[in-house]
Image (cartoon, rainbow, N blue to C red; front, top):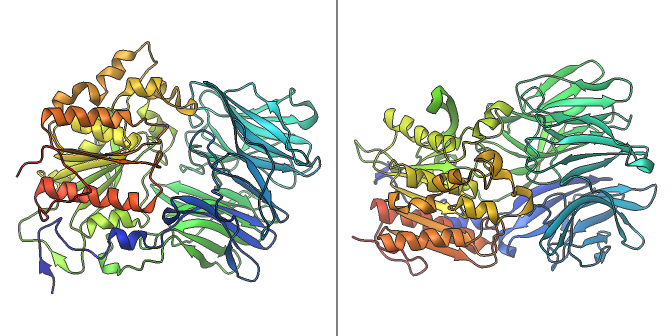
Length: 638
């Protein structure tokens, strides 16, 4: 029989110790010969990224030795840090941003010298013994991005394409004669506009425009062995698959109201691949969930594959085997192998071995709710669930609204133990895919243009209002939390509205003018599209910056900040802290050395999550009132 305890005070087996016990974040997958490789980000090794291999015999082992951290810092977000071909590994090391070459079992050998350069997105030119790479070069305050070729004999770096502000996806044709690539320029982001070009290697100045432009974003160009170039384009509102060859030109393959790509926040994204006979195995998202299908270019057929997963990434294909990272509503992310002949799924690696009784798992409900301007927004709703406890009669649960980052990202409904941490303690949890989120077409994504801090905030507020009207949550116990861009949405909701009673900002933006003048090159003009041109429209920046209106903020906030953050500088959280302290509002601030934009170290992840829960417990009075030495809440009163 279940015991009666107030919502929010339920003891739970889903502790931070259990969540982080042996957890890894699974990253990009690579296939070479009969071996499978993947990246693991390990919080217990201070977030070190390790390349792991499972060979043909089934043996699993770390490939990159201790002391090496596989990570690129191009665009600060990185990705595309590894290339493996014919038993030889090339990778970017975090500490010096050099490219290293190694053979499994051997020691890495530096290919490039320490310099002001960073590298990502490698392609091997076996015909001329060189690598192609996206390069980001920091020369004082100037940052240059270009595509270079790197001599494998002496490590010489020679820029070959440098006319645009940004490049990604250099892709060499199967015969080694042509290079395809994507480029874009300020003030655009790659999901706004990215253009696909093609040129003969011996005459790169004579490039051919393939697709893309000011109102079209191209993603993931990839060659098939017959010389056809495939890619995704959102020309018709959704990122759908297209092909190009010299005889037929550009051709849409299978128009569908679904996204076959994801915004290029990082390098190395992979959402489709080819079987040996030319079929395309592709992943796509529709109504918030990811799916798999087989497209046959020879006859235009499109066959969905029945899968138990709702979140898919890093898809790779070899023969009749498909590999991807997949998660379901009841299982966390894992490295999955699919046999196309038998349709059998095998999990090669789980991100965590922590096994949770399904009686504690709250599964997401997809909701669509009315919001401002007569439009709708979307969210995943998780209700409180416990095997051991239930609430007193005539009570409603507290609500935690989650505002995802990006803001051009998306919330997923696959099992996330950090969500279950809250629901198993008696919280309702609303993960909002506000207007501007990915997965609902370009038009939905563009609704955030000029409206950041307005429509995203409206959607978080109206999602909470919707649940209040439905009698699902306690209107006096509403909290909102978010990281990065989601941290800004959180602070804007708390400052300019009075619905939420508490909040948590993880490395969130409070001063938009400071961000506009003090951020990295990749996002230097991102706010132009989200808010308005700066400094011409600087008043909009001031009007939407929570730091300028702390007199309107009258509810408690806890701030979490990495002190090495180059994307959202720490002084933004510190300014908000000092303002709230002087105003007498309960506030807490946890700063983490050795953390950047997003936390990677296990003890910091644990402290942040437990502190957020403790903070709400003190504010909403549903847990014990014992103090904690590792968190100081200023201005807290009994």
